Length: 222
Image 1: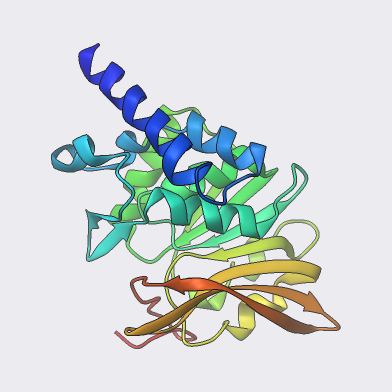
Image 2: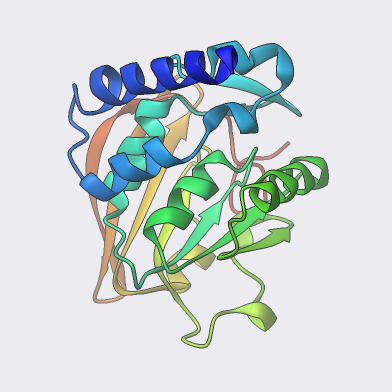
């Protein structure tokens, strides 16, 4: 019980200082961040740092993003309750869980089987049921044989850096849909929001970021 109280105290500080105290104003995003227990997605050795505003290692050379960036990317994606969202890079499943709280359904791809299986187990314990998982190369997009009835996604979030927005993902985004992604190389990445208009992406820059690379056919080489 003492640990639960400690988590609650640190979560409230995160919400008030690191999120609402900066530029996170979407009430649905703040509610999702309040609802999802970040400690559940971390190795035991890092749980005490669950609500510190920084990234943490989760294995396989991957990280869980800092809470502010998770909230910012979710806010910039402008998800409504009827959106079907494609997430590239499941990781530990924390961003997946946040998206599940604001979207109709989340489709998420992870290239590391171990990370995906762990994420599935955590989301299962949290009784989050509106998520579909796939293990593979996220830069190729969602498998065509398993696409939602519409054949496209309303929103796409890429949670690892790409040299440019992968063309297969552009093809799987509806007209008017939004992609949020970190674009650039190791020393220089920009978080961008892209809206699909006339079959092309109209891009705006949000801020400087630093993410691990998305490895894949339309991402970076190993």
